[in-house]
Image 1: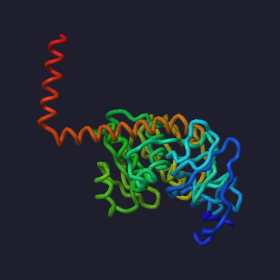
Image 2: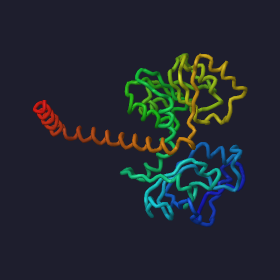
Image 3: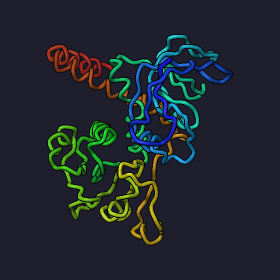
Length: 313
């Protein structure tokens, strides 16, 4: 089979398309025929040799969408549509940058969807991260919310999920270029803040912050978070892994809450919730579209339901 193999750490030139043996199914693992996969920033770190636990050669890829090719798992059918994300995929074992990938049974998630394949391929890791962060931030009506690195895939997705649940919540997003302001406002952001060299060009305070830049800008994020606010830091787009000399007593003294999204541990439960939420969003969208196209039928339906309720009462 064809695969993108990294034999040693380096720049993009170390990504080599080669022929490798097709994986053989073993007990507790499922072989998936890959239909597509997303590209994630963490894979760039791994390719550069910045993931200490990863040994080369390695086929990268922390997610994939595909079809069951071979399995011993009783609830899976050959040809069934599945997705997989994280769980050391593309790190401890070969990942999705290939025609076939061998995955632990517990990491194979069947899906049923009417989405086009191209749309489904774009969803897994991006929407999972955005939804998990949204849950961890415990957002409420009236909160002022900020997304750092708002133009990223996760940032745009987070905005859509948030505005779907809380359309009136104030949502600001940061970008290194104000030339992207129109794009962000179309995605649901109410305001765009310039991020200049890791410092937000504003004095505003926010109740909830999704920080996708990471440790390189986290001290500035602390400064822009209101007393008692929550920060979810789950991105490394700033290219820095850790916070040097982190002192929680001094840096979080205003009763700030710092959380993240540990994807490996919470994947199974959260993924089911994520997929349920996505299904509900699609259902609400279809229902709204039906009502707009069938206004007379909608009025008639409302009239009939009102009459029925009047009789029952």
